[in-house]
Amino acid sequence: MWKKEIRYKALLYPLGMVFLMGAGFILQSIGVFSYCSGALIPQALDGLLGIFTSPFLHSGWEHLLGNSIPIAALLFLLFQFYSEVASRVFFSGGLITGGLVWLMPPIIFGEELVCIIGASGIVYMLAFFLFFGGVFRRDARLLTISLLVVLYYGSMIWGILPQEWFSNAEDARQISWQSHAAGALVGSSLAFFYKNKGEKKKKFIWEFPNYYSEKDDRLWQEYIQKHPEDFLEMPHKAEDDIWKHLDELRKNSS
Picture 1: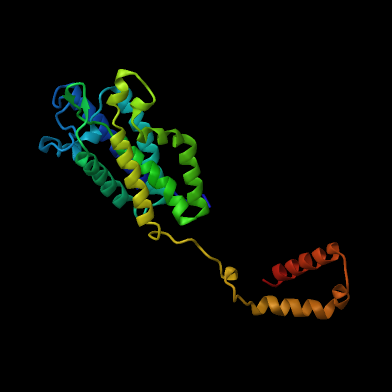
Picture 2: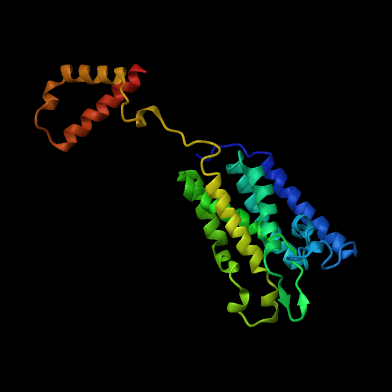
């Protein structure tokens, strides 16, 4: 199930995204971008550009590292196991998430309008897509990915709620739960929308209800003729021996 070559896009996109996030942070550090320059500002014309640029801007090294590791891991899983729709999910999901946040009411902290930066909205979009992607497709391999996401990022669910509900700290209000909630909604919706796209679950011929093998039937009839005594009333052990013998006949005739 897991014997599959690593797709080059599963390495290219995570590395590229982390590189751009690092480059954006360096540009901030040297003054090319101020805190609100390039940020996403809800319902403000100046903040429209932030739909495209804010994921590459961060408030500090801790913020950058906190987004870089999960986004690299989740992008790898997306492009490795959902290669047919990965690009569409990544680009459309990121833009729709940013657009939804921009449409939300402006966020006020104190007397100042909050400028939203960071890639956490995309992180949530990817995590929820990967979780619900396996659930909606009911594929054993993809469900394993869903379980991995829950194992490592399950606590993210609390991030879609206002942080001031859980903490009285001043910086709690500065966490954009709106981005998290928008990303979760978009990722879940895309998982449902693309549930029938991509690689189909393989079904072997003997799994079909009307399957018939002339070869198996011939072997069975030959066995009945050679060993009629085995079809008298017999204990379960004798029945198991018959099936083992049939398997050996099948292997020898192939």
